[in-house]
Image (cartoon, rainbow, N blue to C red; front, side, top):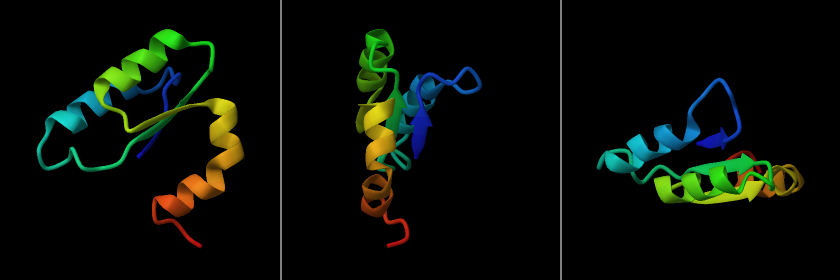
Length: 74
């Protein structure tokens, strides 16, 4: 699952924490992108158990590789 950690419409941190707390769902890979200056949200996402947290610019630059690694179209 890919999350926009800075989204005002969804609470990525609490969603990931709930996923990782559920034994049936905790194996679902999670990736989040965030403003590189928002260190508070970066730390919160990592503490919640998000598998990969990256700057928005890195996410955009690497999106094809991220999707391929997640099993997307090749």
